[in-house]
Image (cartoon, rainbow, N blue to C red):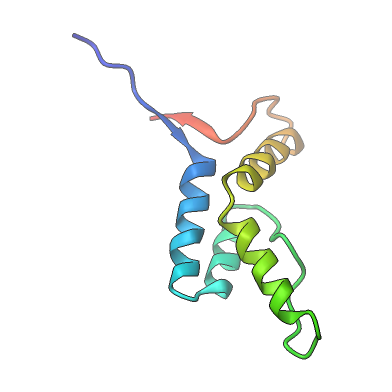
Length: 92
């Protein structure tokens, strides 16, 4: 019996990886991970002196660990590369 290769959902992989980094209090690592995937981070760097610093950090964490945010960014990335294919799912 032949088995189909499972699709790898990259949005799920990336959001899960960022969630793991954020659980370890590694916001900067999660941002670096995002950049390494060719995705622009959700917000400009948060200035620790800004009055809304805590809100900025929480918003960045929420986006980086959000499946929908990653799915949308990967789709946009696919459109920008001209592949015409929605990125975010590959067959292994």
